[in-house]
Length: 207
Image 1 (cartoon, rainbow, N blue to C red):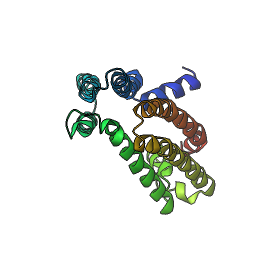
Image 2: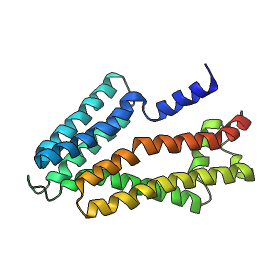
Image 3: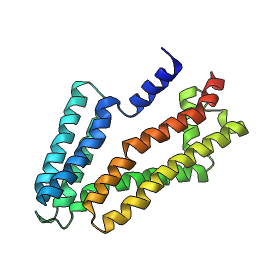
Image 4: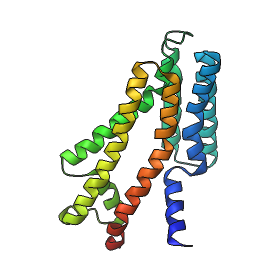
């Protein structure tokens, strides 16, 4: 198998494989489309949540890590509860997207703090993967490269929040759905790809 094919398979695995990609795309898209056509927040949230639960059951059948599945189910439950917490009106329809916004905020804070404390997150993760966790901070070129990779991830989380938070505050459901679709898996895959290209040299040296 060629090196390029190996890299592509590795990136696909990081995204959760084809099922993981569908799981990230379908529920939110279903929610937006149904709400757009029906203006029924209950129907939209329950149907979107049902798709998420089907994917969770599939993950269990495939014997994926149970903690990952449980976290996904909890996220689904919160996504359904938030828009329905005051009844069946559409006052909080945009709150379906709140867990995603909070997740991005949490990752943004974690990655930013890792830079502040001079332990860039990319270095921590890639150092463990390469078995070079004790020495990468001592190599200036490697350290700087991991800093830039970490900044790239910070930029991704920041871009999502910069676009999606104003849409959320304006209760723009369709806009949120489009933003989540474009800034979700496609952008995530792009950042993973560039991170891999930037880190490949350091991982090769570590071997």
